[in-house]
Length: 403
Ligand code: SOE
Image 1: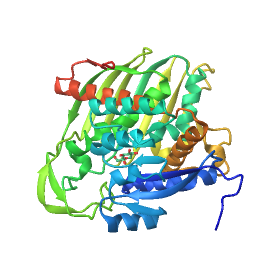
Image 2 (image 1 turned 60 degrees about the vertical axis):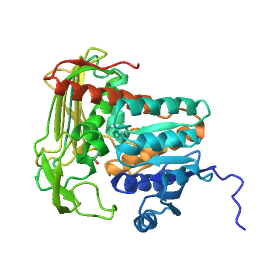
Image 3 (image 1 turned 90 degrees about the vertical axis):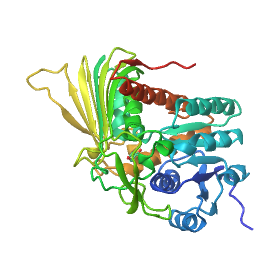
Image 4 (image 1 turned 45 degrees about the vertical axis):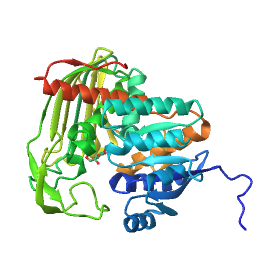
């Protein structure tokens, strides 16, 4: 019989629902977080859950999960699971997360938190009730964990760019510019809630609120669906990439979400912002860009060069001032010290390792991880206001407060 060493860390036994793109990247993060960061708990990849047993078993074997379940209710009912990681499409987030919280499991939930504000409100209620019993929850806005963006947050909080006047944020992808790209779940309103808006617009809403420390207080928006009908995906067995990798079948169906969304915004601290989220920016693969202009300087970031943060110090002598590139790979930069020597750089997957590091640390230390479900709800309210404004000829729409 093997026994745990006396100084072993308490295990954190994880059950993950979903194993496509997000399930795979979360799996990788659960596996590696404790190898690069000193966590107070030891994550164990216990159970992967997916409806199709053969596909789930193949995914579990590939990604290192010990067991498989095919029914999420059974997963949640297991007493050898401490955490439920929700990596399914948005239409099941509320049901899974609420059931898991009620069963006393900590919950990490992919973004957007839910497909509707009402669902997100119910999730916040469940999270708050569970919190009173020491159960933690977090919404997975991974871009907060890009070292360069976490550094930008620190610089804003330290006052390095002064009072923020302008927020300029875009999230540009191009994976459905081809009208024959199949109508996957991300293009179906009943599964995804909305299109580019909720999928990638949600990230720039969260990121700009996080960076500025201000809330978006109102928006004026327009949305467009350029390609109204697409081929339905051929049966993929459910295990392929849920982005452009899927193959098209013969039948066609209507696209029920936005392809692109644009909006202007007011922030609670007086800044004004412009936003663009699209999957039709040919040549832009994952260009999540943010620029902040403040009274004392500016910061600029582009995920396609994610190790770089650009900083202009406007208090310097104008003849020598200018944007300078900070390579966010120094040991003193957020998260960076756990990885490679300066200049060797990180990638997309590291942002999820950092997310798991923060979540597992909060669970182990009994603190509240961020962003909370309440933060996810706040993003959901902005998404709803963008849709409502777009449906009303861009009418300025204040963000509804909690009812
Ligand atoms: C697809 O558009 C997607 O994978 C998003 O769902 C993710 O949240 C983003 O990080 C990358 O693009």
